[in-house]
Length: 607
Image (tube, helix red, strand yellow):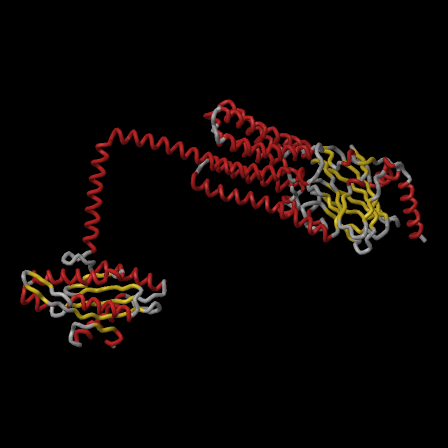
């Protein structure tokens, strides 16, 4: 009986409310079947409780008495206001398949949000939100305050919302089905992610440049990106979501503090980039004064009431950017061309900041362009600033190059003769050094590489062949009966024969990119990269024939010279080192000598 009585009283109250004048209540929000979302602003009526003293029962009584008025001009932004705002709407859900809806206040900085849902049976459900309550009370982990509400089908539900905030009073209320909210939040998070992705890319790109160039402009640009990124992280509600979810104090005070930090970095960057101490000393003094003001105000914001510090900081953004624009115009008129890009960048930022500020004070309606205007403007500004830094650096480099070139020309005119003498001395010294270096690697008699250089070259060529998975072959060449030449004709003839043999061997090996060295006495060693055993044997045979095909003439004597050659091939996966390879090739050489000399033997046949 009691439940029936409450039901009848609820319907009676709704009937009385619907009988009030049109100015006292907005049209009920009718959610048709298949609806996915709906904005509440066209259906809201409101009342400003300037003292913030009304209780929920007082608000319900004023709703029933028609004391609420439609939103002025349909706008749900009221600027910075004291006290609390009450909003009321009647919602009728016609979709029987969707009874759970998500009510979202699409503004993250409200201090406290209280939501009351009154059903026809008299039952009232109460929810709280805002950044003065822990982040975990939200129905969905999202940067905007939100609650899940039950909207039974075909039942008028009265919604009463109380909002209290020392920030800008913006109350864009929106209803979503869970599926629709998932899509909307995904797209919003993607847009925010792209913005911060741009900021991170610009940050790391210019960080590398600063570390390389040590230009102060790049440092202050990095500070500007970091500080302004923190500003938007706070204004978008991401700071409360990720950094201080249980700290209402941080949620309030980080707004003016981060704005002051961003303005200090902006002004200091402009000072450095525009070279104000040299180009405009008076404007530089004014800029320093502004920096000092924002430093002091940022510290004072720790203790100042949020309702006082935030409006001042919001207005100060416009003042700071306008000052930078005026200073930039002044420096540009004096012929400093890099200021053009800076002026364009700050103009983009000024436009976005103006939109944000006007939205905060309720002068502009909330839509995509106004809500994300500061992100769009700041992204363009930071991109253009990065380009301006590159342009400025290029100009400074060109100017430095011009000055350096002029100084060099002057220096050349003054010390031309001395420079020429020094260059000649250096050239002679270089040639001598190269000759000494080359002679230390070559055999004095034949001009071939010596044994020590052969070891270095062999190790390098073996590593290259192993990396390329190709074979490498080693030839040991010994001139036959060379001792008898020295004994019969003397050492001078023997030396001529060694030089003649070295030239013949070198010409034969020229097409094969081989390393040829004198190993000692009448022995030569050859390294053939990328040659397997068959190819190496073919080269060895060619080399042997080149020696016997022609006689060596020395002091009127014609001498026939032949050679015994041992061949060894190192496979790419073999573990042979240079000592193993030389030992194996040497055994093949001795096999050639044992088989009558003037022949080629391999490590396989020797085995």
